[in-house]
Length: 181
Image: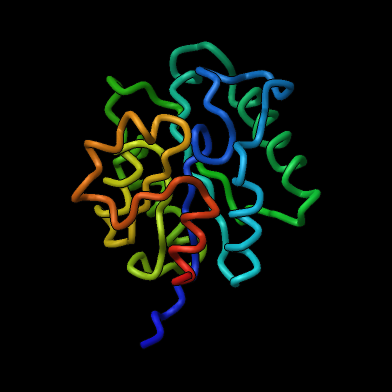
């Protein structure tokens, strides 16, 4: 029995696509995680749209500006564009964990914006990240939620067992799971 294809994959940025460098604000520090580029390419070639959803509390803490974050995102996109990888959108939450907001994962505002902008059916989406908040975001909207063991994934894995739809070694493993390979 064929599994119906899902239309969009929402991905965490730090620890999932690029190395998590603790409040990264300098685009020169952007490094793509091994197998992230290959995994994203597999997803795109299978017809999925890619959307980044990222908590960026360094903005709320005053460590860097939205412009700094955008420069980091631009560098990530430039590095990945060599493989024709393009994100449909990048959403961010600038708030600290103690600020009351509806956008900091696992809150759903970033996902809700993607639903509105791209007419998504959440149950036909995947959420991939390296933290329990990514898994909880997916589950809150009825999406399949995949933990990757990159970034903080190994540390957070025990918290995600029984919650995550799948636990993947990296984005290639996640892509292969999604495609049923």
